[in-house]
Length: 469
Figure 1 (cartoon, rainbow, N blue to C red):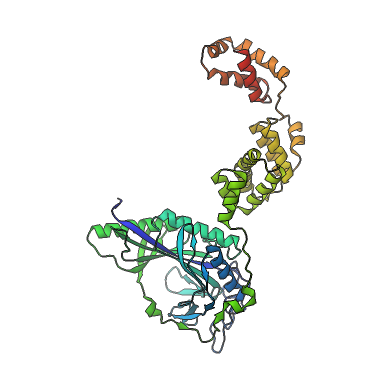
Figure 2 (figure 1 turned 90 degrees about the horizontal axis):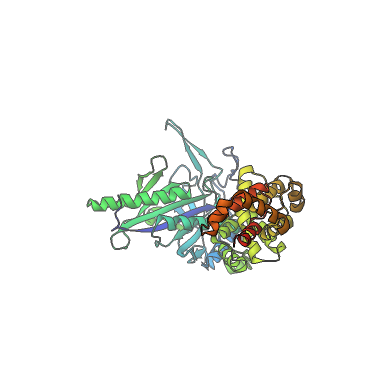
């Protein structure tokens, strides 16, 4: 049941583990693929007495580049704060985070304004025993550099929220800042959801433990429905933190939400204040071409379909291959469109099915596209040539020749074929003359069959039309 009179207001908090060699404040290894528990740890990230943290410059640089890509304001003065809370996965009894002076303020992505981006350390990973009698803690993740991005509460639908999170993941990958795999916990999305009749902010509920983009969308949809129904019954919404149960497809209450005062933030006395403009590693931060820029360039240079562009923007391998093929085609826009279509459907399909890397030479692929564009091989024939090239390499002309896949376009040769079909099907020929235009397709089909699929259908069409005038 939908409660259309209630409008949702959604803000996102997204955490992403940054790609650095070592952790945020020590030289323990930052390795998200380590399966053995408690091997990448040291006295600093285990909070043994007398240890001192040291700031990881690479992590700071990642966040500044993210801020630049978002068009945000980069801080010149910044500092780290202690966020105090007692939980088994926080060895120090506080987390080092940023409160008053984040590295980045403002900026936007996908039309959604960003409030801030700051840097903190990750917590350890808790594993709860099935019988709930014990909890085990793996400290490999404790102290890993973590970016937190907070959006303005201006998102109005689950789709808009999902699109933002997906675009952020893509941006982080382009910048080399994070792999941001949600299933590995390298990127975590939390949604603040409220509903009201007039679109002003109602009582905010935070939804956590979401492990996929689809789950984020479903959790938001569920929460909007739940809050709308509660208000409709005259109930008050409780400000709380809720979890997402993927199996049941619903949220559940976890705890009443703390305010920032409960964390007793104060500047960390063990870490220096940073003056960004005085640190040479943070000057001249070059950015690669960003996803939004790549989309605009593909649209302008190649005029290909939006869905093809999206495939090339999200898959670096396909994007690079397409650009090399387009260059080999002499930037011919019509041929580039044919190439894009084959790459996003056939090549992408073969890659997904086989898991093999792409070894086709761009020049050879461009040659195949040129053959298709002038009708030397049919669309069906091109797929057969492509499969052979994908599996075993080779040149398209040699493959088409060896397999008899060249289309016959010789008008004299095909003229004899057309005569034969007309003699065999006089009623259909007469029907076409009397205006039954769909019979032309039937006659072409008969001629194609007669030729074993090697005749060029465009040439056949012209010959039939000429004969049946």
